[in-house]
Length: 429
Ligand SMILES: Cc1ncc(COP(=O)(O)O)c(C=O)c1O
Ligand SMILES: NCC(=O)CCC(=O)O
Image (cartoon, protein in one colour):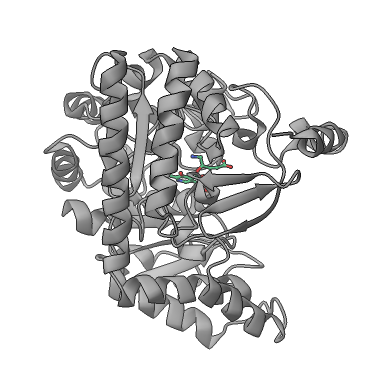
């Protein structure tokens, strides 16, 4: 396998794009080597510029839940594109999208479309502040809610992968309004809330975390946070950018049986087009402009091409909820296979999985928060990543990321992945 074309594209890219990439996690900076430049994708496979084929467990970091170039979505985009790519005026399509989402997910009376998960989370926080008249928020170490200033405090994903302690450019004033504590530690939240009475607008959480590997909420944890929010007049924000339309039709709220006050979406909601959304109960969302004065806007918000792509994909998920079940079954098959292979090696490991989110940490203790994820043998993960890539399996290039399965994966793909795992572990251990 040669990656000469990717190597030369990477050299060229670095002359005109910072680090050669338009989003840092793509750069392979922590695993080393050359990021693959992709020329096309279909179903479960990515093809790089040199023509190599990979089984894809990144799925564009989540969106491609039914596989790449999913025909109904591509057809819908093509049909819509001839009517122009943007109007900057409302369309019926946006109403259909909002109505469909409301019918699928709990606790959303009003929903506003944006163009990324970052925008969705940034806007949700503004709404929470505007609604409560309070300034501070609580987020959890290792959770990532996009790159808005308020969230770049003890963040997961690339911020954790590159071990960035403080992000230059985020002012101390903004950072001071973001309080953090460990995921799964309810007592730590109680303490923060007691120390900041009447000052906390919102608690924002990834209900299943996917930006420090995959980490599950412990039993009673989210319900405990819900209770604290109710008692203290704090809004509970579920960042469902990863979990929305993936863990269930109604996302983590439905799957875990917890109600959020505000919910944010991204990734699957746009089927690979730039889409995000934030929504919630009417009395809260009514503060959003032009109903209220919490200003929030976007030239391309509700873009017709993005809407038809997302609408088409969500319609399929809505009408055929068994598809999510099928992906979950594939994920459990993969998990069981990985378990058998890893157990036979004798090295310590943890596999966390829920629905079609899964990750491996080379850890000798349960991985339940950022500290335990960071304490794992992530050097070994980096070697494992390259060994898998060489064998045609494209995993996220960091232990601080969840893998995402898609429904185009076949039984054979899963078995090839397991065989590659066996060989890769033999190589790296
Ligand atoms: C949980 C979560 N929230 C928010 C974001 C930000 O979304 P985007 O990259 O679309 O801005 C991401 C991923 O990037 C995410 O994983
Ligand atoms: N877990 C990381 C993401 O989902 C975002 C990808 C990116 O920043 O490019």
